[in-house]
Amino acid sequence: MNRSLRRSILLSSRISQVATWTTRRSYAFQAAAPPIHQVFSRRAKWLQKERAAGDVETSRVADYLKDEVAIRLCDRLLDIKRTYPKALDLGANACNIARALARENPDTNPEAPVSDPIATRIGHLLAVDSSETLLYRDTDQPFNDQINMTRQVLTDEETLPFEANTFDLVLSSLSMHWINDLPGVLAQINNVLKPDCAFVGAMFGGDTLFELRTSLQLAEQERRGGISPHVSPLADVRDVGGLLQRAGFKMLTVDVDDIIVDYPDTFALMTDLQAMGESNAVLGREMGAIQRDVLLANDAIYRELHGNEDGTIPATFRMIYMIGWKESKDQAQPLPRGSGDINLKDILEKK
Image (cartoon, rainbow, N blue to C red; front, side, top):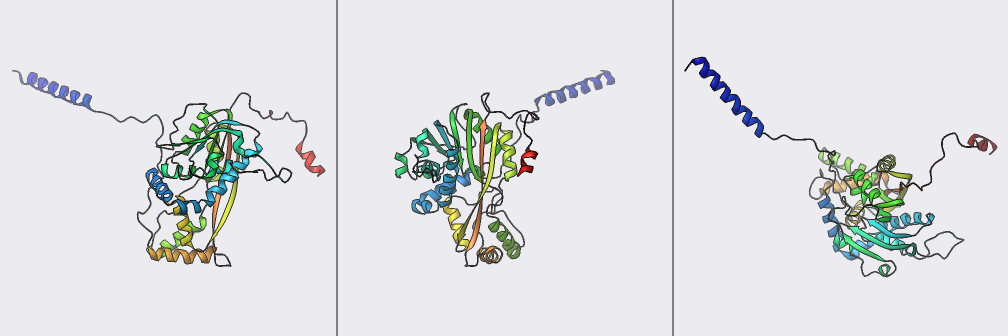
């Protein structure tokens, strides 16, 4: 056989083999949705809730903060003159919102000393949470007889298994600060709401536990020459309005409220946080207990920087309350710019 012909045959055979191998390769394609940045371990948070609720009496005593925030959240419903045939409590914890809704005389207006519980305006409340032990902890309490409610355990609180336009009201108190995909959950809440219905929520944010955060960082820097995350990152009030707007909510209301609780020492503060199920669940956290010398240094630094004159230490919990309405054609709309007949400047100058 001619050498040139043989060489061309071998070359064509190799090219065909390469072509065959090339067609067998698989390629990675970019997902349609952006990847979700995982900040918190959902399993770790579930375990913390389960363990906290296992000690029923201690868990109930440590619920003072969740009960107070639930009351302040439900007070906002007093300004909305509506009834709610179907309501959802997302991240219900131990049904603190249901307990607040069942309170007698919730209106603090001195002109109306007697008022009906807000629960009388709710046809049915569905309370959902990932922790079964915590969700069913207080089924023997009297408030269960004062409100029509059912409990449901969710495998994943970041995926809502409800049809669109299902609920007349969605409430959430002190659970959304552990959500990895907060924009996605807000969009799902907007989806399950009926048109012109409200989402009312409360979450830790901003400078919550800034005293503990700074003192722990200084203590670790002094004792170990470095720091690790012990207090979870929290959304700022300036971000919440943008997230609600991005999720499609209208007529937004966002406000901040600081609750300062005094403790005898940092050990009592950390014990209560653990009993609340609010221990650290950041994915990059250092596993195991904090070293004793770091804890002692933290207590001393905390007292020096933030301590009260009576020997106690303050802990600041910053609450972000939010109200957003699902868009509707019948919803009140702002007037066009320049359509006003009265100049605000003239009114202010008269004062």
